[in-house]
Length: 200
Image (cartoon, rainbow, N blue to C red; front, side, top):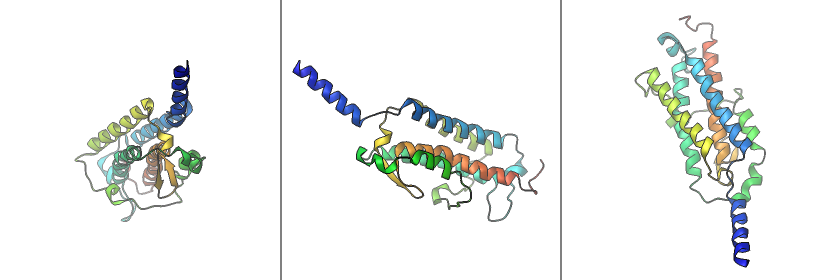
């Protein structure tokens, strides 16, 4: 009897430290990931070569460059979230990131706050065609969706600093990845709204 109680106690203790995402957390992340995927694919559907490559100004990105930045960031940010999980779990830090889910989801979309892309995410015409690039984006985003849908990883107990939000847990890094694409889809729409954007 004592053995059974001891095992039960250990299981409860372990569960307290190694908790998978809640249903609501999983659904929130999946909703953001699916929404961003649809927004990008809709935004670039049917564009001509001239529309893809139009630049509103020499120092601004074209639709193609914005889309490439989004595509490059997918694997970069997903891999970063996975790397965070290789660090020791420190659940005692959870209080430091309390409430940051909403902060990440709202402030990332604030286009009044500009930033500079890190070198690995600067567009360089890496893909031979726009279609090839979009296929890579879909592959990367679908990998993230599949991961979030099924993972039992302890995302809420692993942490790493973000340049804009300071400490985030691995789940919040995935939220950032999801809305990062939405932020730049807004940028892409700004390009398409330019009065000189080609009609076809």
